[in-house]
Length: 147
Image 1 (cartoon, rainbow, N blue to C red):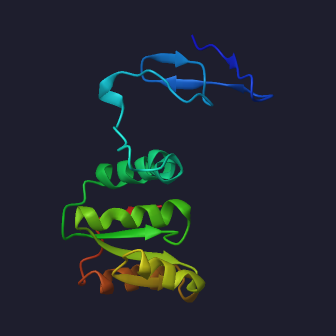
Image 2 (image 1 turned 120 degrees about the vertical axis):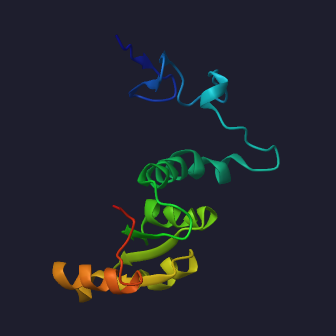
């Protein structure tokens, strides 16, 4: 059974749901948790710089890990120039070869974030997109597609 707690600094009822239950205080400075479910943040890293990694970064990292793509394999990232998309391009640390797909206006951002190749979605239909990805990925296609 879940409970909702009212947050004094918000008009909304807010719920933090952990694996084992609930706890009040999404706007708190501190919260307790089991050590298996937390990641230490170095004191030298500002909270505003760490925050995106805790939400978007973990979300996208989990998708890449669950894809089971291995180092050196091709991964297609759809919407690669968006908020979660460019976080996914942190896949460079996993040594994945990235094909970013998005609108042509996002090409520079996607490449700057580390995509090895870029495909403009507006220039392809479904069939030609599959052909382009296959050709780009050494004729084999991608090992994973993250959308």
